[in-house]
Length: 387
Ligand SMILES: Nc1ncnc2c1ncn2[C@@H]1O[C@H](COP(=O)(O)OP(=O)(O)OP(=O)(O)O)[C@@H](O)[C@H]1O
Image 1 (tube, rainbow, N blue to C red):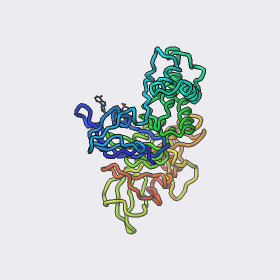
Image 2: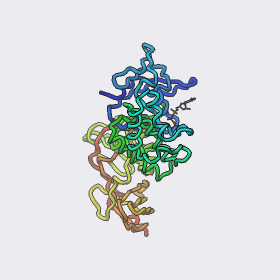
Image 3: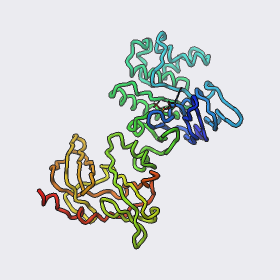
Image 4: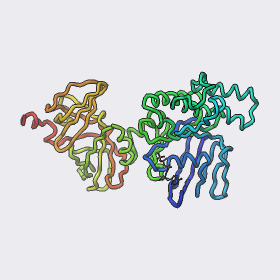
């Protein structure tokens, strides 16, 4: 059974169309992250699922319950949806102890005292804060308060846990620690989690699935690895790439050839398997720095590159290179001694090149078979000659 099924959800707030026809299915047990830039509607969708925001159009099912159906006017109130929401501000009651904060939801449900006590203790143990039971929120650090907020959300054993940027108020060290805790919690409790963030790295490391939002729409839903390697649009590629990825962009054009079509780019000609699109159409290739191999050996499809700058960081070395007109960033694992001004050979991994239509920004699913480098970039020693 799916945990959530969303069909054509539209939401307007104060006359602004915030969610524009969202369709999304979330399988049970998934750690689904809503990722996207600020203001793209992630929180609004989370609030719509929680029952804190009404929808103008569409349907929402949570497990086997119908939560929203605009056609019939059906609207299930928040407390009956089996979901719990944790905000970025912990929103703990300052006059209650940790125990009382966590127990509150169970007391509202009128659970007998001994059962309440047992469940609170399990939730506190799950969040590894048993020793804080008698403290007040004002006596806790930010990270501890966030643990209490999550304990309070899991104690009622919701089918779905909704987390809205829960780590954004924590410092970098605590964030990493809490990420690990959330992963462990998800693994142990097997609860479906929906997590909102604009942090690409957080989304990639935590999730089993990521839904990318732009302008009130979901533009891609994928496993993190797939999202990283095959962003479906240039917009998504740029957004994912913003997190220090140093994505290389290479412009080109589709040209006709005897066997069909190929791509003419500043790197050279790229042989493709099949039809790419209209001849003459402009395309953009993206290539991640770690998908280019740097070596001293020339190969049939390698490019002569001039080393412009080297950025070692211990675990990896970023090498800024130039191939003719083109600037190419290459990532090498570990510490590599590369001399600025020297010439080396770069070999892109063909299966990792992504090809986009420049005008529509859409990924073109055409495998690249071979790169025939431009003559002057291939066995070139121009740079070393000129030194
Ligand atoms: N209560 C409100 N009043 C006015 N506008 C709102 C309200 N809530 C949301 N919006 C608007 O809806 C759009 C989407 O907001 P939402 O909070 O869902 O975005 P988000 O992707 O979660 O961004 P962030 O990461 O900044 O929270 C924004 O343009 C925001 O201005």
